[in-house]
Image: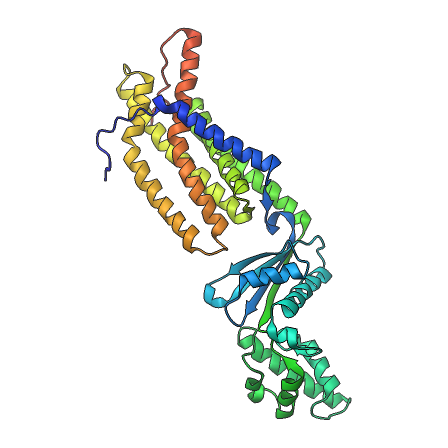
Length: 401
């Protein structure tokens, strides 16, 4: 399918406009990286604790954030986890420790924060046990202290209350970690225990499902490996293009991809978005995508070089770009629409990943036309001026049939 017929756009004639565009966005991104927003790193890179919380109803994120600020957790990050109908949120806290006590402390911070500032039932319950977040041990201790069946403190009482605590916890786990109503426990626990629970406990309407921690040392290792992954991918592509085409083709393509990476990362800093492992995966995807688009243009340049040696270099490169324009618009356009849909409808968890794809696809498509190809011509013009000859590109190595 061909969208454009007999296109005659003078791309190289607009190279100074392209250069100005690239300089403006590159300098703006670098300025933000070093002097303004810098680069916000996700918990994957800087270390921290991620607490997964499930709510009985649709959570009010603004109210949760206000509750965190009221509790002094000003750096807490809150984002949706899973489908909207799951009513789950991820709350990330900055944390330097990596031991079990740190996990327990973070869990207790979140429960305390939500109990006092978010849960209406929790704010009104004084001295009562939160049945949605009580562990089996907490529930057993409460039963022994209150002794609703008047069993005393002997071993039989411990055995009986342990069984009841296990049954209540199993019921809660089978219902997504939350209890709809204490009265629903009538078929699980003895009547005297259910009656005591109705009087001495409450349901907060939320529960902590999971707590995970990433230590600062692990975060530093991930930062190093992410950087090396990007650099290795660029080096591998340079070597491939050097072997498959010529060195100047490889250098031009890698410079264009490096340009894409700088602008994409700069866009994250300008937008004050967090850099995470999923964003690194998006950037690596974009490196390959942009490189593929550049290779398509280079391959057409190579073909035209073999068929037309008398045409000026600038005209030949312009013609090659125009011949691949339909393919570029179709492939990049459809991919861009997919990434844009993810950005708009994908939810908070995919927001940064899809943002990287949207920015990277636009810049990657632009650079294959406006950065890589003009660089080929500029280099050959420079070489020709030194030798006093007409600028030409190497036709690259011939393909083996």
